Length: 510
Image 1 (cartoon, one colour):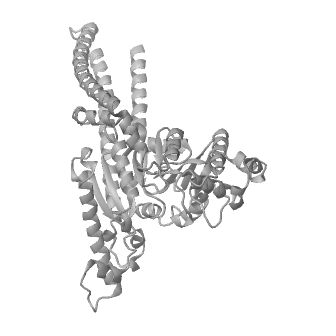
Image 2 (tube, helix red, strand yellow; image 1 turned 45 degrees about the horizontal axis):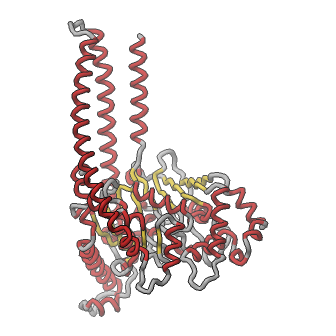
Image 3 (cartoon, rainbow, N blue to C red; image 1 turned 90 degrees about the vertical axis):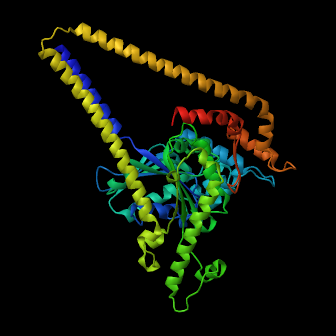
Protein backbone atom coordinates (compact mmCIF):
# COMPACT_ATOMS: atom_id res chain seq x y z
CA UNK A 1 0.00 0.00 0.00
CA UNK A 2 2.82 2.36 0.89
CA UNK A 3 4.62 1.59 -2.39
CA UNK A 4 1.43 2.29 -4.33
CA UNK A 5 1.13 5.72 -2.68
CA UNK A 6 4.73 6.57 -3.59
CA UNK A 7 4.17 5.48 -7.20
CA UNK A 8 0.98 7.52 -7.52
CA UNK A 9 2.77 10.55 -6.04
CA UNK A 10 5.52 10.15 -8.65
CA UNK A 11 2.96 9.75 -11.43
CA UNK A 12 1.09 12.90 -10.36
CA UNK A 13 4.34 14.87 -10.20
CA UNK A 14 5.38 13.71 -13.68
CA UNK A 15 2.01 14.60 -15.19
CA UNK A 16 2.19 18.09 -13.65
CA UNK A 17 5.69 18.54 -15.09
CA UNK A 18 4.44 17.40 -18.49
CA UNK A 19 1.70 20.04 -18.39
CA UNK A 20 4.31 22.71 -17.60
CA UNK A 21 6.40 21.65 -20.58
CA UNK A 22 3.34 21.87 -22.83
CA UNK A 23 2.83 25.49 -21.85
CA UNK A 24 6.33 26.55 -22.93
CA UNK A 25 6.48 28.82 -25.99
CA UNK A 26 9.15 29.84 -28.48
CA UNK A 27 9.96 33.46 -29.36
CA UNK A 28 10.04 35.14 -32.76
CA UNK A 29 12.05 38.37 -32.47
CA UNK A 30 11.07 41.30 -34.70
CA UNK A 31 13.57 44.11 -35.41
CA UNK A 32 13.10 47.33 -37.32
CA UNK A 33 13.26 51.05 -36.67
CA UNK A 34 10.24 53.25 -36.16
CA UNK A 35 8.54 54.17 -39.42
CA UNK A 36 9.43 50.97 -41.26
CA UNK A 37 5.97 49.48 -40.72
CA UNK A 38 6.48 46.90 -37.96
CA UNK A 39 3.12 47.59 -36.33
CA UNK A 40 1.27 47.43 -39.64
CA UNK A 41 3.11 44.22 -40.52
CA UNK A 42 2.09 42.56 -37.25
CA UNK A 43 -1.51 43.75 -37.65
CA UNK A 44 -1.65 42.23 -41.14
CA UNK A 45 -0.03 38.92 -40.15
CA UNK A 46 -2.47 38.61 -37.23
CA UNK A 47 -5.42 39.75 -39.36
CA UNK A 48 -6.24 42.55 -36.87
CA UNK A 49 -6.07 45.87 -38.71
CA UNK A 50 -6.45 48.15 -35.67
CA UNK A 51 -4.62 46.06 -33.05
CA UNK A 52 -1.29 47.85 -32.60
CA UNK A 53 -1.05 51.66 -32.84
CA UNK A 54 0.69 52.74 -36.03
CA UNK A 55 4.01 54.56 -36.17
CA UNK A 56 2.17 57.79 -37.00
CA UNK A 57 1.91 58.52 -33.28
CA UNK A 58 5.64 59.06 -33.00
CA UNK A 59 8.85 57.13 -32.43
CA UNK A 60 9.27 54.90 -29.44
CA UNK A 61 12.33 52.69 -29.48
CA UNK A 62 12.54 51.60 -25.87
CA UNK A 63 9.70 49.16 -25.15
CA UNK A 64 9.84 45.38 -25.53
CA UNK A 65 6.34 44.42 -26.73
CA UNK A 66 5.29 40.76 -26.74
CA UNK A 67 2.25 39.47 -28.63
CA UNK A 68 0.79 36.05 -27.86
CA UNK A 69 -2.54 34.21 -28.02
CA UNK A 70 -5.20 34.63 -25.36
CA UNK A 71 -6.14 31.00 -24.78
CA UNK A 72 -8.66 31.71 -22.01
CA UNK A 73 -11.36 34.07 -23.34
CA UNK A 74 -12.35 36.46 -26.17
CA UNK A 75 -10.81 39.64 -24.69
CA UNK A 76 -7.78 41.60 -25.83
CA UNK A 77 -5.46 41.89 -22.83
CA UNK A 78 -2.33 43.99 -22.17
CA UNK A 79 -0.13 43.16 -19.18
CA UNK A 80 2.17 46.12 -18.56
CA UNK A 81 5.32 45.69 -16.45
CA UNK A 82 6.54 48.97 -14.98
CA UNK A 83 9.83 50.03 -13.47
CA UNK A 84 9.97 50.24 -9.71
CA UNK A 85 9.93 53.63 -7.99
CA UNK A 86 13.65 53.30 -7.21
CA UNK A 87 14.57 52.40 -10.80
CA UNK A 88 12.59 55.34 -12.21
CA UNK A 89 14.08 57.84 -9.75
CA UNK A 90 17.56 56.63 -10.68
CA UNK A 91 16.81 56.86 -14.40
CA UNK A 92 15.32 60.35 -14.04
CA UNK A 93 18.53 61.55 -12.39
CA UNK A 94 20.54 59.99 -15.21
CA UNK A 95 18.32 61.71 -17.80
CA UNK A 96 18.86 65.12 -16.23
CA UNK A 97 22.58 64.46 -16.01
CA UNK A 98 22.58 63.85 -19.77
CA UNK A 99 20.52 67.01 -20.41
CA UNK A 100 22.93 69.10 -18.35
CA UNK A 101 25.65 68.48 -20.96
CA UNK A 102 25.96 71.86 -22.68
CA UNK A 103 28.94 71.06 -24.87
CA UNK A 104 28.64 71.40 -28.64
CA UNK A 105 29.45 67.76 -29.13
CA UNK A 106 26.68 66.35 -26.98
CA UNK A 107 26.37 62.69 -26.18
CA UNK A 108 24.07 60.61 -28.39
CA UNK A 109 21.87 59.96 -25.35
CA UNK A 110 20.77 63.63 -25.29
CA UNK A 111 17.86 63.27 -27.72
CA UNK A 112 16.66 60.08 -26.04
CA UNK A 113 16.70 61.79 -22.62
CA UNK A 114 14.79 64.81 -23.95
CA UNK A 115 12.28 62.55 -25.69
CA UNK A 116 11.54 60.58 -22.51
CA UNK A 117 11.08 63.59 -20.25
CA UNK A 118 8.85 65.54 -22.67
CA UNK A 119 6.81 62.46 -23.57
CA UNK A 120 5.97 61.94 -19.92
CA UNK A 121 5.85 65.44 -18.42
CA UNK A 122 5.14 67.70 -21.39
CA UNK A 123 7.06 70.04 -23.72
CA UNK A 124 8.13 72.49 -20.99
CA UNK A 125 9.68 69.76 -18.83
CA UNK A 126 13.04 69.94 -20.64
CA UNK A 127 13.42 73.54 -19.40
CA UNK A 128 12.87 72.60 -15.75
CA UNK A 129 15.36 71.33 -13.21
CA UNK A 130 15.03 67.95 -11.55
CA UNK A 131 14.01 69.64 -8.30
CA UNK A 132 11.27 71.64 -10.06
CA UNK A 133 9.95 68.54 -11.72
CA UNK A 134 9.86 66.61 -8.45
CA UNK A 135 7.61 69.32 -6.97
CA UNK A 136 5.25 69.13 -9.93
CA UNK A 137 1.79 67.62 -9.29
CA UNK A 138 2.27 65.27 -12.20
CA UNK A 139 5.42 63.82 -10.64
CA UNK A 140 3.44 62.70 -7.59
CA UNK A 141 0.80 61.15 -9.84
CA UNK A 142 3.39 59.27 -11.90
CA UNK A 143 5.28 58.25 -8.77
CA UNK A 144 2.17 56.49 -7.45
CA UNK A 145 1.28 55.09 -10.85
CA UNK A 146 4.72 53.50 -11.36
CA UNK A 147 4.56 51.36 -8.24
CA UNK A 148 2.31 48.66 -9.67
CA UNK A 149 1.69 46.48 -12.67
CA UNK A 150 -1.20 47.42 -14.91
CA UNK A 151 -3.63 45.24 -16.87
CA UNK A 152 -5.90 46.46 -19.67
CA UNK A 153 -8.70 44.23 -20.97
CA UNK A 154 -11.28 44.99 -23.65
CA UNK A 155 -13.49 43.01 -26.02
CA UNK A 156 -13.36 45.72 -28.70
CA UNK A 157 -10.04 45.83 -30.59
CA UNK A 158 -10.25 49.57 -31.48
CA UNK A 159 -10.95 50.62 -27.89
CA UNK A 160 -8.18 48.32 -26.69
CA UNK A 161 -5.71 49.86 -29.15
CA UNK A 162 -6.56 53.36 -27.91
CA UNK A 163 -6.19 52.30 -24.27
CA UNK A 164 -2.78 50.72 -24.75
CA UNK A 165 -1.27 53.32 -27.15
CA UNK A 166 0.14 55.64 -24.46
CA UNK A 167 2.16 52.78 -22.94
CA UNK A 168 4.01 51.81 -26.11
CA UNK A 169 4.14 55.02 -28.20
CA UNK A 170 3.74 58.78 -28.00
CA UNK A 171 2.85 61.83 -30.06
CA UNK A 172 5.56 64.36 -30.82
CA UNK A 173 2.89 66.95 -31.62
CA UNK A 174 1.13 66.42 -28.28
CA UNK A 175 3.77 65.64 -25.62
CA UNK A 176 2.88 64.78 -22.02
CA UNK A 177 0.90 61.87 -20.62
CA UNK A 178 2.66 59.17 -22.66
CA UNK A 179 3.79 56.60 -20.12
CA UNK A 180 6.19 54.44 -22.12
CA UNK A 181 9.31 55.79 -20.31
CA UNK A 182 7.96 54.07 -17.16
CA UNK A 183 7.35 50.78 -18.94
CA UNK A 184 9.75 47.85 -18.91
CA UNK A 185 7.73 45.56 -21.19
CA UNK A 186 4.19 45.00 -22.48
CA UNK A 187 2.58 41.61 -23.16
CA UNK A 188 -0.45 41.75 -25.47
CA UNK A 189 -2.73 38.70 -25.61
CA UNK A 190 -5.17 38.39 -28.49
CA UNK A 191 -8.08 35.96 -29.00
CA UNK A 192 -8.78 33.68 -31.99
CA UNK A 193 -5.11 33.14 -32.87
CA UNK A 194 -4.56 29.54 -31.79
CA UNK A 195 -3.44 28.44 -35.26
CA UNK A 196 -0.75 31.14 -35.39
CA UNK A 197 0.33 31.76 -31.80
CA UNK A 198 -0.72 28.87 -29.56
CA UNK A 199 2.94 28.02 -28.95
CA UNK A 200 4.61 31.21 -30.26
CA UNK A 201 5.33 34.65 -28.82
CA UNK A 202 6.06 37.53 -31.21
CA UNK A 203 8.57 39.88 -29.57
CA UNK A 204 8.88 43.40 -30.99
CA UNK A 205 12.44 44.17 -29.91
CA UNK A 206 13.66 47.79 -29.81
CA UNK A 207 17.14 48.88 -30.84
CA UNK A 208 20.11 48.87 -28.51
CA UNK A 209 21.74 51.92 -27.03
CA UNK A 210 18.98 53.11 -24.71
CA UNK A 211 20.49 55.19 -21.93
CA UNK A 212 18.72 52.89 -19.47
CA UNK A 213 20.89 49.81 -19.02
CA UNK A 214 17.98 47.69 -17.78
CA UNK A 215 16.20 48.11 -21.11
CA UNK A 216 19.41 47.38 -23.02
CA UNK A 217 19.92 44.17 -21.03
CA UNK A 218 16.29 43.21 -21.74
CA UNK A 219 16.99 43.63 -25.46
CA UNK A 220 19.96 41.29 -25.36
CA UNK A 221 18.28 38.65 -23.19
CA UNK A 222 15.24 38.62 -25.52
CA UNK A 223 17.44 38.22 -28.58
CA UNK A 224 19.19 35.18 -27.13
CA UNK A 225 15.85 33.48 -26.52
CA UNK A 226 14.55 33.89 -30.09
CA UNK A 227 14.06 30.74 -32.17
CA UNK A 228 13.44 32.87 -35.26
CA UNK A 229 14.27 36.50 -36.12
CA UNK A 230 12.41 38.86 -38.47
CA UNK A 231 14.43 41.86 -39.67
CA UNK A 232 12.10 44.55 -41.02
CA UNK A 233 13.12 47.35 -43.39
CA UNK A 234 11.22 49.59 -45.82
CA UNK A 235 11.89 48.25 -49.33
CA UNK A 236 13.29 51.54 -50.65
CA UNK A 237 16.05 51.39 -48.00
CA UNK A 238 16.50 47.63 -47.62
CA UNK A 239 19.81 47.45 -49.47
CA UNK A 240 21.40 50.85 -48.79
CA UNK A 241 20.25 51.49 -45.22
CA UNK A 242 22.98 50.46 -42.79
CA UNK A 243 20.68 49.81 -39.84
CA UNK A 244 18.99 46.51 -40.89
CA UNK A 245 22.33 45.11 -41.97
CA UNK A 246 23.88 46.24 -38.70
CA UNK A 247 21.07 44.44 -36.88
CA UNK A 248 21.64 41.36 -39.01
CA UNK A 249 25.36 41.40 -38.25
CA UNK A 250 24.59 41.76 -34.55
CA UNK A 251 22.06 38.91 -34.75
CA UNK A 252 24.60 36.64 -36.37
CA UNK A 253 27.15 37.38 -33.67
CA UNK A 254 24.62 37.12 -30.83
CA UNK A 255 22.93 34.01 -32.20
CA UNK A 256 26.16 32.14 -32.88
CA UNK A 257 27.31 29.05 -30.98
CA UNK A 258 24.84 28.27 -28.23
CA UNK A 259 22.04 30.45 -29.63
CA UNK A 260 18.49 29.19 -30.10
CA UNK A 261 17.85 30.82 -33.48
CA UNK A 262 17.18 28.41 -36.34
CA UNK A 263 15.99 30.87 -38.96
CA UNK A 264 16.11 34.54 -40.05
CA UNK A 265 13.52 36.28 -42.26
CA UNK A 266 14.46 39.56 -43.94
CA UNK A 267 11.18 41.43 -44.57
CA UNK A 268 10.99 44.38 -46.98
CA UNK A 269 7.89 46.45 -46.14
CA UNK A 270 5.83 49.22 -47.78
CA UNK A 271 6.14 47.67 -51.24
CA UNK A 272 2.97 49.48 -52.40
CA UNK A 273 4.58 52.90 -51.86
CA UNK A 274 6.06 53.51 -55.30
CA UNK A 275 6.09 56.23 -58.00
CA UNK A 276 5.17 54.11 -61.01
CA UNK A 277 6.16 56.68 -63.67
CA UNK A 278 9.56 57.30 -62.09
CA UNK A 279 10.19 53.59 -61.55
CA UNK A 280 9.30 52.68 -65.15
CA UNK A 281 11.82 55.27 -66.32
CA UNK A 282 14.62 54.27 -63.93
CA UNK A 283 14.12 50.52 -64.41
CA UNK A 284 13.75 50.97 -68.20
CA UNK A 285 10.51 49.03 -68.31
CA UNK A 286 8.24 49.05 -71.35
CA UNK A 287 5.23 51.32 -70.88
CA UNK A 288 1.94 50.00 -72.23
CA UNK A 289 -0.14 52.90 -73.55
CA UNK A 290 -3.53 51.36 -72.85
CA UNK A 291 -2.56 49.95 -69.47
CA UNK A 292 -4.48 51.32 -66.49
CA UNK A 293 -2.58 53.28 -63.85
CA UNK A 294 -3.38 50.59 -61.29
CA UNK A 295 -1.97 47.88 -63.53
CA UNK A 296 1.17 49.92 -64.22
CA UNK A 297 1.71 50.39 -60.51
CA UNK A 298 1.20 46.67 -59.87
CA UNK A 299 3.72 45.80 -62.59
CA UNK A 300 6.27 48.13 -60.97
CA UNK A 301 5.64 46.74 -57.48
CA UNK A 302 6.10 43.12 -58.55
CA UNK A 303 9.19 43.99 -60.62
CA UNK A 304 10.82 45.83 -57.72
CA UNK A 305 9.89 43.02 -55.30
CA UNK A 306 11.71 40.40 -57.38
CA UNK A 307 14.79 42.60 -57.71
CA UNK A 308 14.78 43.36 -53.98
CA UNK A 309 14.70 39.66 -53.11
CA UNK A 310 17.57 38.96 -55.50
CA UNK A 311 19.65 41.90 -54.23
CA UNK A 312 19.15 40.99 -50.56
CA UNK A 313 20.09 37.35 -51.15
CA UNK A 314 23.20 38.36 -53.12
CA UNK A 315 24.31 40.64 -50.32
CA UNK A 316 23.70 37.86 -47.83
CA UNK A 317 25.94 35.55 -49.82
CA UNK A 318 28.76 38.02 -49.14
CA UNK A 319 28.01 38.25 -45.41
CA UNK A 320 28.96 36.01 -42.50
CA UNK A 321 25.53 34.40 -42.32
CA UNK A 322 26.77 31.14 -43.85
CA UNK A 323 28.76 30.56 -40.68
CA UNK A 324 25.51 29.90 -38.84
CA UNK A 325 22.90 28.85 -41.38
CA UNK A 326 23.83 26.03 -43.72
CA UNK A 327 20.75 25.84 -45.99
CA UNK A 328 18.82 28.38 -48.04
CA UNK A 329 15.64 27.57 -46.08
CA UNK A 330 17.29 28.96 -42.94
CA UNK A 331 17.16 32.45 -44.47
CA UNK A 332 14.16 33.80 -46.41
CA UNK A 333 13.37 37.18 -47.98
CA UNK A 334 9.79 38.53 -48.05
CA UNK A 335 8.41 41.62 -49.79
CA UNK A 336 5.20 42.67 -48.05
CA UNK A 337 2.45 45.26 -48.36
CA UNK A 338 0.37 45.44 -45.20
CA UNK A 339 -1.92 48.12 -46.67
CA UNK A 340 -2.68 46.11 -49.82
CA UNK A 341 -3.45 43.04 -47.73
CA UNK A 342 -6.37 44.88 -46.12
CA UNK A 343 -7.30 47.12 -49.08
CA UNK A 344 -8.20 45.36 -52.38
CA UNK A 345 -8.37 48.77 -54.09
CA UNK A 346 -4.56 48.76 -54.18
CA UNK A 347 -4.85 46.05 -56.86
CA UNK A 348 -2.61 43.37 -55.33
CA UNK A 349 -3.73 39.79 -54.72
CA UNK A 350 -3.30 38.66 -51.08
CA UNK A 351 -0.58 36.21 -52.19
CA UNK A 352 1.31 39.08 -53.88
CA UNK A 353 1.57 40.92 -50.53
CA UNK A 354 3.57 37.99 -49.03
CA UNK A 355 1.49 38.27 -45.83
CA UNK A 356 -0.08 34.77 -46.36
CA UNK A 357 3.44 33.35 -46.75
CA UNK A 358 4.46 34.79 -43.38
CA UNK A 359 1.23 33.47 -41.85
CA UNK A 360 2.01 30.02 -43.26
CA UNK A 361 5.52 30.33 -41.87
CA UNK A 362 4.09 30.89 -38.38
CA UNK A 363 1.52 28.10 -38.81
CA UNK A 364 4.21 25.61 -39.78
CA UNK A 365 6.39 26.68 -36.85
CA UNK A 366 3.40 26.42 -34.51
CA UNK A 367 2.50 22.94 -35.82
CA UNK A 368 6.09 21.73 -35.48
CA UNK A 369 6.25 22.90 -31.88
CA UNK A 370 2.89 21.27 -31.16
CA UNK A 371 4.12 18.03 -32.75
CA UNK A 372 7.31 18.10 -30.66
CA UNK A 373 5.38 18.81 -27.46
CA UNK A 374 2.87 16.03 -28.24
CA UNK A 375 5.71 13.61 -28.92
CA UNK A 376 7.41 14.51 -25.66
CA UNK A 377 4.11 14.28 -23.80
CA UNK A 378 3.41 10.81 -25.24
CA UNK A 379 6.93 9.62 -24.38
CA UNK A 380 6.54 10.89 -20.83
CA UNK A 381 3.13 9.23 -20.56
CA UNK A 382 4.57 5.94 -21.84
CA UNK A 383 7.27 6.15 -19.19
CA UNK A 384 4.67 6.70 -16.46
CA UNK A 385 2.51 3.82 -17.74
CA UNK A 386 5.55 1.56 -17.96
CA UNK A 387 6.36 2.36 -14.34
CA UNK A 388 2.83 1.43 -13.26
CA UNK A 389 2.85 -1.70 -15.43
CA UNK A 390 6.22 -2.93 -14.19
CA UNK A 391 5.16 -2.59 -10.57
CA UNK A 392 1.88 -4.36 -11.30
CA UNK A 393 3.65 -7.24 -13.06
CA UNK A 394 6.18 -7.46 -10.27
CA UNK A 395 3.36 -7.74 -7.75
CA UNK A 396 1.14 -10.18 -9.65
CA UNK A 397 3.71 -12.49 -11.26
CA UNK A 398 5.42 -14.96 -9.02
CA UNK A 399 8.86 -15.28 -10.56
CA UNK A 400 12.23 -16.42 -9.29
CA UNK A 401 13.61 -12.92 -9.75
CA UNK A 402 13.58 -10.96 -6.55
CA UNK A 403 13.29 -7.21 -6.23
CA UNK A 404 16.91 -7.12 -5.17
CA UNK A 405 18.17 -8.79 -8.35
CA UNK A 406 16.11 -6.43 -10.54
CA UNK A 407 17.47 -3.50 -8.56
CA UNK A 408 21.06 -4.72 -8.98
CA UNK A 409 20.66 -5.25 -12.71
CA UNK A 410 19.20 -1.77 -13.14
CA UNK A 411 21.98 -0.26 -11.05
CA UNK A 412 24.70 -1.99 -13.08
CA UNK A 413 23.14 -0.84 -16.36
CA UNK A 414 22.94 2.72 -15.12
CA UNK A 415 26.56 2.67 -13.97
CA UNK A 416 27.68 1.39 -17.35
CA UNK A 417 25.69 4.04 -19.20
CA UNK A 418 26.99 6.76 -16.88
CA UNK A 419 30.61 5.68 -17.45
CA UNK A 420 30.10 5.90 -21.22
CA UNK A 421 28.52 9.32 -20.78
CA UNK A 422 31.39 10.48 -18.56
CA UNK A 423 33.95 9.41 -21.18
CA UNK A 424 32.03 11.24 -23.89
CA UNK A 425 31.89 14.42 -21.78
CA UNK A 426 35.59 14.16 -20.98
CA UNK A 427 36.40 14.10 -24.70
CA UNK A 428 34.14 17.09 -25.35
CA UNK A 429 35.69 18.96 -22.42
CA UNK A 430 39.22 18.38 -23.76
CA UNK A 431 38.28 19.64 -27.23
CA UNK A 432 36.58 22.76 -25.88
CA UNK A 433 39.42 23.46 -23.45
CA UNK A 434 41.98 23.29 -26.28
CA UNK A 435 39.87 25.64 -28.44
CA UNK A 436 39.40 28.14 -25.63
CA UNK A 437 43.05 28.06 -24.60
CA UNK A 438 44.08 28.76 -28.18
CA UNK A 439 41.56 31.61 -28.37
CA UNK A 440 42.74 33.10 -25.06
CA UNK A 441 46.33 33.22 -26.28
CA UNK A 442 45.30 34.93 -29.51
CA UNK A 443 43.11 37.40 -27.59
CA UNK A 444 45.90 38.30 -25.15
CA UNK A 445 48.28 39.04 -28.00
CA UNK A 446 45.84 41.20 -29.94
CA UNK A 447 43.80 42.86 -27.15
CA UNK A 448 45.43 46.30 -27.43
CA UNK A 449 45.12 46.41 -31.21
CA UNK A 450 41.52 45.16 -31.02
CA UNK A 451 40.59 47.85 -28.50
CA UNK A 452 42.04 50.60 -30.70
CA UNK A 453 40.24 49.25 -33.75
CA UNK A 454 36.92 49.16 -31.87
CA UNK A 455 37.14 52.64 -30.34
CA UNK A 456 38.88 54.92 -32.84
CA UNK A 457 36.37 55.47 -35.67
CA UNK A 458 38.17 58.35 -37.37
CA UNK A 459 41.85 58.82 -38.09
CA UNK A 460 41.89 62.19 -36.38
CA UNK A 461 40.28 60.69 -33.27
CA UNK A 462 37.16 62.87 -33.38
CA UNK A 463 34.53 62.06 -30.75
CA UNK A 464 36.99 59.64 -29.13
CA UNK A 465 36.18 60.82 -25.61
CA UNK A 466 32.40 60.53 -26.20
CA UNK A 467 32.73 57.01 -27.54
CA UNK A 468 34.98 56.06 -24.63
CA UNK A 469 32.51 57.61 -22.19
CA UNK A 470 29.65 55.60 -23.69
CA UNK A 471 31.68 52.37 -23.61
CA UNK A 472 32.49 52.89 -19.93
CA UNK A 473 28.92 53.85 -19.00
CA UNK A 474 27.22 51.02 -20.93
CA UNK A 475 29.54 48.18 -20.04
CA UNK A 476 31.47 48.15 -23.32
CA UNK A 477 28.59 49.05 -25.70
CA UNK A 478 28.30 52.06 -28.02
CA UNK A 479 25.59 52.87 -30.57
CA UNK A 480 25.93 55.93 -32.81
CA UNK A 481 23.20 58.56 -33.06
CA UNK A 482 22.12 57.30 -36.50
CA UNK A 483 22.26 53.68 -35.29
CA UNK A 484 24.58 52.74 -38.14
CA UNK A 485 27.64 52.06 -35.98
CA UNK A 486 27.43 49.61 -33.11
CA UNK A 487 30.48 48.81 -30.99
CA UNK A 488 30.71 45.97 -28.49
CA UNK A 489 34.17 46.06 -26.95
CA UNK A 490 33.67 42.82 -25.01
CA UNK A 491 32.63 40.97 -28.15
CA UNK A 492 35.62 42.39 -30.00
CA UNK A 493 37.99 41.20 -27.28
CA UNK A 494 36.35 37.76 -27.31
CA UNK A 495 36.33 37.45 -31.11
CA UNK A 496 39.29 35.07 -31.21
CA UNK A 497 37.60 32.82 -28.66
CA UNK A 498 34.52 32.53 -30.87
CA UNK A 499 36.56 31.91 -34.03
CA UNK A 500 38.62 29.15 -32.42
CA UNK A 501 35.54 27.55 -30.91
CA UNK A 502 33.05 27.81 -33.75
CA UNK A 503 33.78 24.79 -35.97
CA UNK A 504 34.23 22.29 -33.13
CA UNK A 505 31.19 23.69 -31.32
CA UNK A 506 29.04 23.05 -34.41
CA UNK A 507 30.35 19.49 -34.60
CA UNK A 508 29.58 18.81 -30.92
CA UNK A 509 26.20 20.58 -30.93
CA UNK A 510 24.84 20.28 -34.51
